[in-house]
Length: 168
Image 1: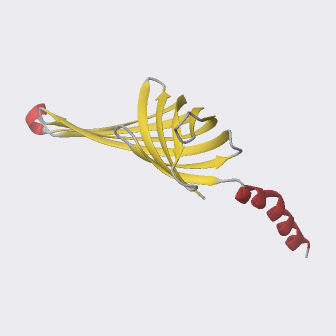
Image 2 (image 1 turned 180 degrees about the vertical axis):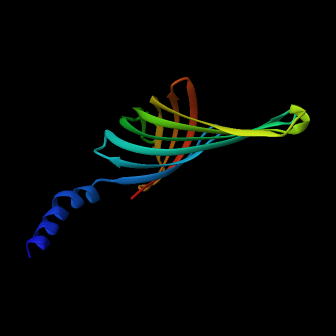
Image 3 (image 1 turned 90 degrees about the horizontal axis):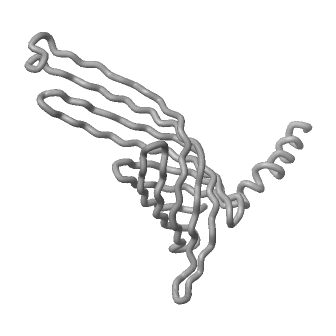
């Protein structure tokens, strides 16, 4: 019986407030990446968001091939600023900051025609932890569907994203 009471108490203290506050999920398309995000709207002005993105590229030059995959995962805090212009529906400007971990995997192959001996191949893996900052504009098309344009700066990299969000 005590376990049931603890479970009910936990439900009211932890789960119920989470369900009362909007949770949202989205898809983001970047310059050369695709990703997903999951967010928690703390109130009308602040949100916390986790994101995942992936980018694949392949380059071949003079018989040498390099395939690279970049995966980024991060957590950001977002501050929303409501805007209202005459004759324009309300929208939000936002600023965000957080941390991102980027994993870069590169596979390369050099054929025997280039090395003049046996073919050669290998891979290089690297990880980077870096701050991410950015901003943009957000517009609510309906109560549950939101569109967002944003620019992110992570280290020396810049990414422009178009995001479609569904608020639960």
